[in-house]
Image (cartoon, helix red, strand yellow):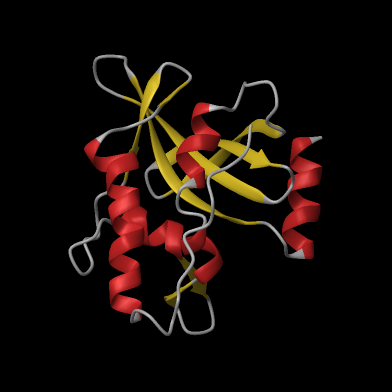
Length: 162
């Protein structure tokens, strides 16, 4: 089984604003209009903050945070792979996909949460956060997804996985 093709941006053919609309349309279909399931629960994206009419969960999947500027900036590699998170989530246990999986307790402003890491071929990670709702049902929120090509990220994930 293979991942879907990249959603490449032809800078000559369309401006950034048009490209990000194409990327958002894919994300919208995969996580807002419909949702994948993971470990018996639905996967949703965080809605807030809404920026340019797009959910916060979307922006975490297509931008990177620059701590020096304390702002998010577009990340073309994340945008190109926007079709990958749903496929990885839905195939975490499938034969033919090399997806490493582990959980980790993460401290947030909302308390401690269990985060699920789905790492495809040590190349791309999808991070989900588990929430138990009032009725006892489990919902997973898509936190982010990104290419894992930085040395410190690879080392940290290898250590956590093992």
